[in-house]
Image 1 (spheres, rainbow, N blue to C red):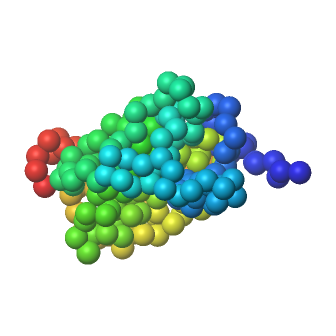
Image 2 (cartoon, rainbow, N blue to C red):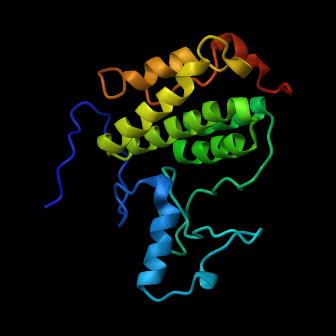
Length: 202
């Protein structure tokens, strides 16, 4: 019997029927590959993007949950887009504000992959916070707590000199307070004074 998740501390999840409830998004591609092998599907027949990278082509809802083929979903963020830090933060914030943290995580993941070495853990942590928020909105407190904690740990070393106006201290406090009464599901990635710089090239 599946363990019943404790939801009393969490905001009400946005519900949508799915067969992958609680799936750890960080391992979605691995799980799909294993499913292909189990069903005898050749890896070469897997869905791929325009660059030839394996990517599940099923449409997804605003929280990244797979929908049936042919369903109307939310357009996913293209992979491998090079953005300035300001552009990445502005786009991720827009998606978070619109209730789509899974899609924000894809933007932040691109920034992580292209960031200079000394900032990679910061962007990795921001992507993890977005995934943690995704789990929270999907009603998975265990996954949320785990990803939010890992994200906070990765960004915490940048609190003294946060680059690009990122509100590292505020995000750490936000992650630590997850699930408590009044917890906001729309964290601010940048300090208020710095959000006017979103359109500038960092």
